Length: 153
Image (spheres, helix red, strand yellow):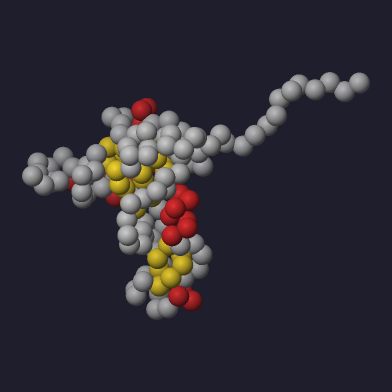
């Protein structure tokens, strides 16, 4: 007689559509290269975020662009927009790292940081996966955000 425990091992649990960490759609009509954030009413937290830590390789034509880089944008490669779509996630605003739950597929946890220096989400702290953050750039933006009027009137 074989005993069974009834426990079935599964991979990471994917959030339901619109929940924190779920895939979302960025509302831009141009190619995204490394970072994009936009309000997204379909996300419970109201924000869709895409972050990519790798610098794009330089190029002279499309043959210089290895996957996941799809095409040459003149001087540097542009990411395959299917990668952008698959890696964009719903996120939320926060006050500190502890406010940020784990994100499926994020190996090093989430941090509460500003990610944009423009638009209506300028200097808004939000949860972002550490896998795709540059500590130097994040610290520099956090310092800039302390300056009065940095995000405009």
